[in-house]
Structures are given as C-alpha cells and as structure tokens.
Length: 104
Image (cartoon, rainbow, N blue to C red; front, top):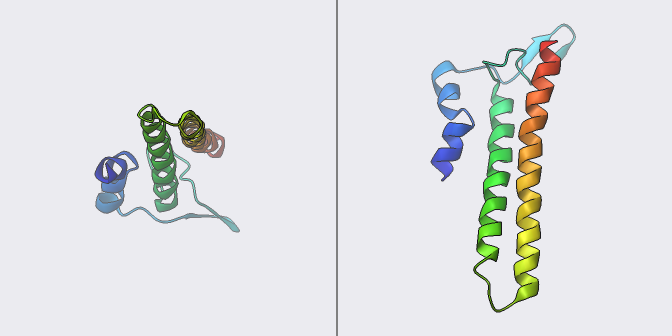
C-alpha cells in the first residue's frame, strides 16, 4: 500500500525529474509549482500525507464494520474513519485550488 501511495503522490516524478523543493519568486518562495503538470518536492509530500489520510480513513471505516460485539467502538471508528477520509479529500482539493490560484 505504501508503494501505491508513493506512486500516486508523484514519487517516480521526484526520482526521475529531480524537481526543486521550492521555487524562488521575487522576494519570496513558492512551495507550489505554478503549472498543473509539474510539482515541487513539498507538494508531493503534502499529497502523500493527504492520500495516506484518505486511505487510513477508508481502512478505519472498513474495520468498523467488522466489530459486532461493541457498538460504541464501531461507531467511533466509523466516525473517525469518515473524518480522516474527508480531511484527506479536502487536502487534495485544497492543493488543487491553490495551484489554480498560483497559476493565475
């Protein structure tokens, strides 16, 4: 699963292209690459973390269905799993919207 997350977050792109960790822009630095087809190292780390949160949330929600003896524990795992999945989805959407704003 970690390998799949590595591929989805652009790990091979980081190895093959060797992108910069940030982009100097006048008197400040950008951690987001201004083009949608490219990324920085910080972007790929953030995407890896958000995809991991989504996967962990879906896994927790799945595991909550296998707890038949303790309803309270199953409900708490389900809500925690939904929370992680929503946070991961929101993080991916956030980085996409931020790239659109940086692009202008």
